[in-house]
Image 1: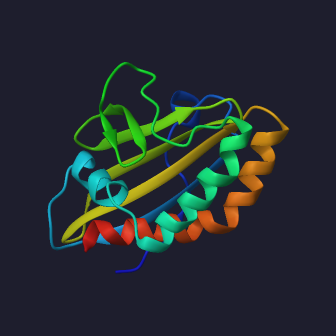
Image 2 (image 1 turned 90 degrees about the vertical axis):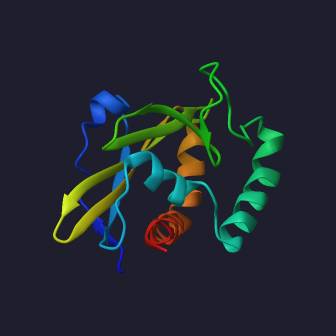
Length: 157
């Protein structure tokens, strides 16, 4: 199972108006049938140990700046997968993410029928608000591709 970077196929303006960053990664799954929620749970519900270590380091670094270090419950709902509040969902698409003072982000998990199975695509959208957001995004981007690819591989595991 190989994860591929693909062109984002989402309506960025509808999901996060003004987003300055968007990327997408996709994996084919041929052994199981998933809806978007189940795919997101497999992807976001647990992280490899090395990702957990990076998140712990991130939380230690950003806490003094007043940035969020846990899943916020801004909507008054307790619908959270891993660190991410669920913002909307259909059988084919789940949108999660949150807004912070430095940036807003969304992760979109799409499930479509494909040859002999399904294709799961994870799209990330980011809207930065200030210099701190731009610095933060530039700092995490080298790790982002590795993290998303690793987490997408969990969908088929």
